[in-house]
Length: 553
View (cartoon, rainbow, N blue to C red):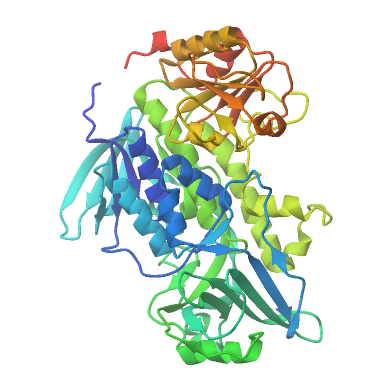
């Protein structure tokens, strides 16, 4: 039966996750509508930590420069226990990682993503609520209600629920959301202070009682502006939501998570905590907003069903420890968007969209478990080797997120370097024709789909692989040849780059033998082929693509 689709994808929810999904879809030419029941962007600095991996994703989308101009760097954390300074944590990453840690109020993140989305002619339909939906093998019928009460029925190929911890999409899809709430309550405040703490460092000050238990807590994250911080702290009894029998849940929802509307701490409440715990005597001023909030930890039993998917807080909620929540949700959206786009184009294997759950749900489970462990036992409870703080830092930066064992990626390879399913590392020093300056590998991958990186001297091999990739994928795979340091830069097709610093060879674990890496649109390695042949390549592409001659459009 033929259907007329009003749009390709409906995205419910216009927070950072929904906006990333919509922008990634529109960037690949997919028709998309994004709706949000709120009439305007909320002016709260909720999620503020931006991980290096998120900046890499935004680099691929072409909007990192705007973020860097708006954000402030996060250099590390200063910790105090009972007024005594503990070891300083410095957030130092390997030099090949292109971005460090940053802090940016959530409303600024949303503003930047919304402006980026508008470049594609798509705006947020505010005050528009998703009421219900139904799906069949061919698509999804979505019922929307505007602020005026007018109702509209939209036919779409897919629905993506980025509608938060109380997700209607999750509920109507019948997904379980197992977990529980933490008994503690906290309060947030966005203030300025007049202390002389070093800029760019978070501050964590605790008080421990005679039994060694933490009974008072202050966490300060820097925000753009002179001495401006988002502070979180233990809530005093008089501001407790639990004491009044209410909280940030919804009737019959059972999920207690997030900011509570209606009341929050006053400046005097925040000052009282600073008087007890601040490492320097200081006075707080210019309270921009405040709230009381509760935390739960939950995860869905699956990330979608049929043509309907969930991402971000609709799929997983957990403590804000390590600023993992928003960033994990953004990676959800980034992973899902390219798969839906390829399926809509008609170039995808039947199992492509289903791989979203296979790849992202294990990541969500790990993040929930880790943040709960860190929140209850401290970061020292991490099972990572305590003598290897670099690994712990890379994990917190979300640079170790990977999809080894995914049905989309090739088998593990022998030898050093990243494996199929790992993040494709960046590197510097790639010389190209015309450009008078060296490029980074991410310059080659920016705003592209699948890319085949062929390393070695053989020009003919690169051309053969490029033709095979383009023919099988219907022109959806581009190819770049990277030649070893010291070789000549010659004009040819596919385009050639010289690894002048040997950085690509070092980071990718290659030597003189020819090798090829298939890099997915989300920046993960789909396969490592050594030695690369057209037969190996097409076998790997068949994990993702429907052969071009079988595509009917």
